[in-house]
Image (cartoon, rainbow, N blue to C red):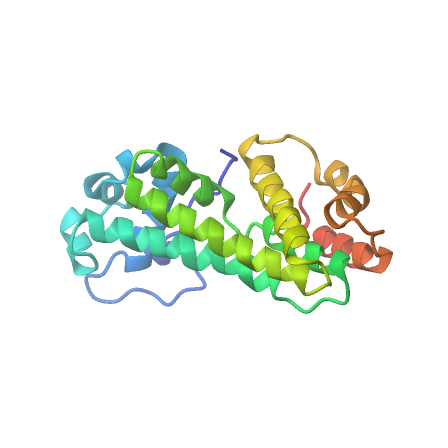
Amino acid sequence: MTNRATPVLHRDDPDKNPLTGHVKVTRQDWLTMAREVLVTEGVAEVKILILANRMGVSRSSFYWYFENRSDLLNALLAEWEDRNTAQIIAHCQMQAANITETICNFFRCFVDPTKFDRGLDFGVREWSRRDPTVRLRVDTADKTRLKAIIAMFVAHGYDKVDADARARIVYFMQLGYHALEVRETMEVRMSRLAPYLEAFSGRPPDQSAITDFLRFVEALGID
């Protein structure tokens, strides 16, 4: 997995309102820490006592927010769906003048770390290898994401068969790119953008859309 920033709890975030009374952590803090452990150590280590120790609280506070560990894990899956799958759908549905722009919109949620959490995505996929119920949710998410990408191509004049094939190429390439943990600078990656776009779309890329996307990436300040 890629290096991840240390999760910031509510009590340590100067932008959040101070916690009151005997409350030391929030429900979201439990989810945040659970997500971090899932990504870095796997679902087997997502245990109430481990999370409590990392946050410096008693495990009894867990039960203010969750019924049991299964309840926490279900909430974690819901958060994954609400964040990652929803981001892909939203970016596929962004208005675009041409196919170059719409594919660049799709890529925006992958280059911006505040949008799509790739560590979480592969943490859930690793979990699904051992849990058939989670595997079903992953399969459902992939179908939902592909449906949105297919619609993205259809909206720009591709027939359904062609759109289906191109959607799979774009989506599985993106997942594979992260799974292989390709090591290259953003500058090198963006140098391949134009030929990538032509290969994905089968059409000459629109330079103005490329320029806008490169400005977006530059503003993120990612090396």
